[in-house]
Every structure is written in C-alpha cells, then in structure tokens.
Amino acid sequence: MIKIGVLGLQGAIREHIQSIEACGAEAIVIKHKEQLDEADGLILPGGESTTMRKLIDKYDFMRSLKEFAESGKPMFGTCAGLILLAKNIIGYDEPHIGVMDVKVERNSFGRQKESFEADLDIAGVAEDFQAVFIRAPHIVQAGENVEILAKHKERIVAAREGNILGCSFHPELTDDHRLTAYFIDMVKEAKK
Amino acid sequence: MKTGTDRVKRGMAEMQKGGVIMDVVNAEQARIAEDAGAVAVMALERVPSDIRAAGGVARMADPRIVEDVMNAVTIPVMAKARIGHIVEARVLEAMGVDYIDESEVLTPADEEYHLNKREYTVPFVCGCRDLGEAARRIGEGAAMLRTKGEPGTGNIVEAVRHIRKVNAQVRKVAGMNEDELMTEAKLLGAPYELLVEIKHLGRLPVVNFAAGGVATPADAALMMQLGADGVFVGSGIFKSENPAKFARAIVEATTHYQDYKLIAELSKELGTPMKGIEISSLAPEARMQERGW
Image (tube, rainbow over all chains, first blue to last red; front, side, top):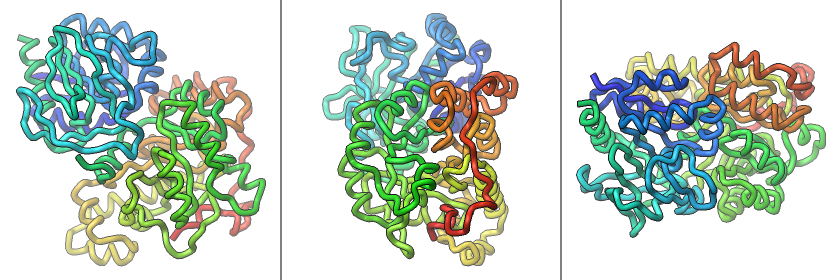
C-alpha cells in the first residue's frame, strides 16, 4: 500500500491525513526525520512557512528533506509548503528546501480580508476545482521544465516539475480530494 | 471569487494549528516573536497582567501600535476589540488586521450582546468556558475559539478547567442520540443546528486554542495534551527574564508536547517566569472570564 507522509511540525496536518485516507492510501504524520524513510511521498501542509522553517532547522530536517526530493520520491507543497519547495522567494536571499524551479511571492494576494475562494481549471485534475486561498503566495516565474497546471487571474497557482507538485491554495480544506488523488498517482508512478 | 466565507475565515485558523500566538506591544517584541517561530502575534497596548495592574477601562490598542506591528512582521497580526464594540472591530478590519479577538481582557462595551461577526470579512476569535458559550460564539460567526482561562495571572488552572469542560461536553454531544439534542441545546443555551454538526463531526467545527494563564513550556504542552489546537501566550513571554529564549521554548514544547525529555531540556535555566496570581485571591469583579455572555 502507498504510504504518504505529512510533515507534522505545524499547520493543517489533520486535514491532509483525512484527504490521503479518503483517497485510499495510508497516511503518517512525520514529526521526526527518521520517519521519512517509511514514506513513499511527502506532503508539506499549509501553515506558517516562517514557523515551519524554524522547526525544520531546529530538528535538523533540512538535509533529509532535500535527500527525499533527490531520491525521486514525490513531494507536494500546499501554500506554505509551496514556499518551502521554491528555489526563489521574493525578498529572501536563500530558499528553504529549494527543489522546485519557481520564484514565489509570499502573501501576494494581500492580507486575510483579501483571502478568497475561487473555481479553478487544473490541467489533468479537474475543470471545476473549488480552491481556498488564505494569505496565499503565487508563482511569479516558472523554469522551463515546470508544467503550469492552473492560473487564477493570470497568476500561476498550481504547477508541477517532475516529482514535485506545488499549489498556492488549500485542497485539504474542502472535500474535493482530486488533487490529492493526482499526487498519489504520482507517488504510485514513482514507486514502480 | 468570494471573500470572507466561513471556509476562508475558519481555514485561516486551521493554518495556525500546532502553533503559538504571542501577545506583543511593539514592533521589537513582534520581531522577537516571529524569530522564535510564533504563527501569529496579537498586537496590544498592554499585556493582560499590565491591564490588571493599571485598572480602569481597557480599550482597543492605539492603531499606531497595531500598524507598527503589521509593518514589522510577515506572519499574521491579530488585535483585540472590546466585546460588542462594533466600531473598534470595524476600525481594526479597515486597517487590515488578519484576525480580531473579541476579548474579555478588554472592558466590555456591551453587557448584553456580542458582535454579529458574520457581518465582517475579517475573521474573529472569541473566548469560551463551556460548550454553550463556544456554540453561541460560533453561532454569531466566530471562526476560531480559545479558552478564556484567567488572563494575566500566569495560573493555568482556569484554562485547564475550560478546555476539559468544552471537550467533555463535545464528547457527550457526540455520543448522544439525535432525539436528545434539542433538550441539550436548551440546557446549554447553544444553537441546535450546531450541536447536530458537532455530533456528526465528533469535534467543534472551528479550531480551539488554549489561552489565559499559560506561563511555562510545560503549561503549553499540558494544554496541547488536553486537546487544544494551539496556544496563545499573553503576559508569559515578555514578562519573563529572557523573552527570546522563553518564546522559543514555548514554541518547541507546543510542537512536541509529548516529548518530555525535550521539554525538560528546554525548560532548563529559562529564568524566572512571570510571578503569577492565585485565582482565589482575585476579587470576583477582577475575574475577566466572567465577562461575556
């Protein structure tokens, strides 16, 4: 059975676990880096990216996370998770994990009162995906090997580069599990 | 495209789960909190223990302080409005604050009605001591809850009482027969539809943080263990001897609330925590948790 880890340092962990289980895969909360070996794929949940980064450093997760990506096991970052994956972050000299060839801007739609829901057409996933954006980032620039999966008002909000998937919004906050299922298919493919 | 929906408001609080929200009174404290790994800060003019000491009427903070804090950090900024004070809440919303705490720490502006929080685009957090209070606040549109505890005392006993009470009542409702829910709604003073929802979910439909008396890393971990989704720390951090160290320790203890060896390590030589107040020594009118209805 496919086993998907959810980085369990802070944020919407429970929702991702439920979504993975609803797709028929096994889910584990990753609180220690040693647990990464057990997982076939990893989700970096929404939350506060600054907080998650502090905890990643504190518990010496960084090298293990980079190795996880290099080994070809798929990773999926939602909102704060996308920021952790990006190679470039506007206003920052250094990336976090830095394994996806995109440039992102944090809180790029504004503060909380500008947070919103919108219907998205996500290539290969769904034409009517209800997406929840909360103080969301967006992808300002994508490298040539990055496949753009969805845009909202001309801004890139979902993309894939090989085994790395990222989105600005929170698929875990609705009962629509199609994007999670798409990621699980990526994991199945990678495991073959 | 829709803003201010329940999903967007409640979702914002979901993203704060497992984290610590810290009271700050200026930009410098806000930066210390962000560096320590806080998921959000609460911008205030005075922390609760100073509000107690100062006495008099406690109001919304000077907008300048809120603005300074908003400019200093990239994490979300919350601010407090008085219970029922429509204009303070609208002012904070207009300023772009990310979350408003309709708070009993401030002197209530209305002794009968809370804000109709559904009318706002900005989400609200409110205090509760039991499921009736929690459900009334959700009914009014609160997108996040916290225990009331007894703010500014550095004494965890009331927050423990409140989280245990709410969670025990949620378990009771979850186990009840649907036939019994209307009477339970009447007894609790809770909206019936919400009890039906709680029964089906087996939990509250919004996140519930601990607040009011968290003074040490062990206190924060205790509240997590009792089922809190995260922790507010008010006076505890910046009333301690070494705020930066203290703040980091609270964040770590909240993340790894069951790792007792780690909590032992990070509790070492933290310096003196805030002094604290024995609740029974408080005059009834000095108990902030009695505010709100």
